[in-house]
Image 1: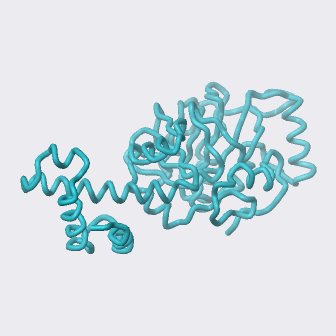
Image 2: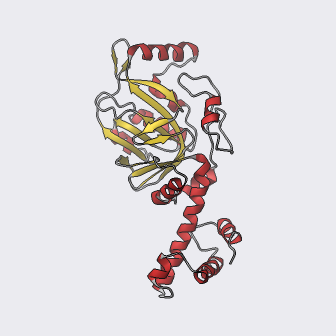
Image 3: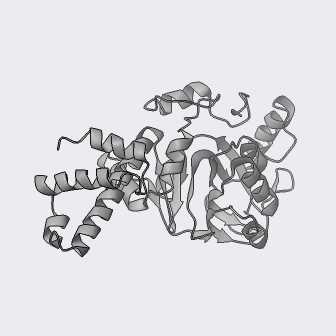
Length: 303
């Protein structure tokens, strides 16, 4: 199901989305958000943070990794398309204006923190800048967590505090990256008590020292998160697959003592490269990369 094309309060315009993501030439959701294929998402699950970081660095994307998270399901891997939300410290006049538009013009009945969650699709990751809010700041507990997981099949990257952590841990696949835990909940009544205001949905969003765009591929594993621009996602996957195969070949040949560590660690000679191509052909049906992808690698080689 595609994302409904509605004029939701705080959501980026389709024209602006297309402008900011113009390097992506593939499929999009109805609101313009890039839609990297499910095949790339599935293959991305085997990519390491180091492999992704190296490809992004080579393209001059140097602010795409963020670490130092607390985690739910720390041994699992989270991959999905980013849907972003930006919160700021609560301000009554802005909060009331946004509420009035959302409730009266857009027909929203829930509180603001549920608006971006309503837009989640399968394969999305909810990425929220909650400006590190702690006491009285959490906008996600086990109720919204269950909704997020039901809609997306994924967890969250949440730059702030969560609550109901016990309940969130009971959601089997809710792999999540968050800053802190606090048992309180956010306050969003502009006339009585207010801590957070939602100022953007699917806008460029700051997460720590990174910039996350809607449609970026979120790769979360091993305590860190990298945000991969959609137009680089396929390259990241293909580079990772080649590195994976070369490492397997190199380790095998080192155990056999066919080559020295110096020969494997440096740029490979034509002799080793030819041996690698033969090894790929010989093991094509027994490697952790699909036969089709290995054949593509072989077709591009000149030895």
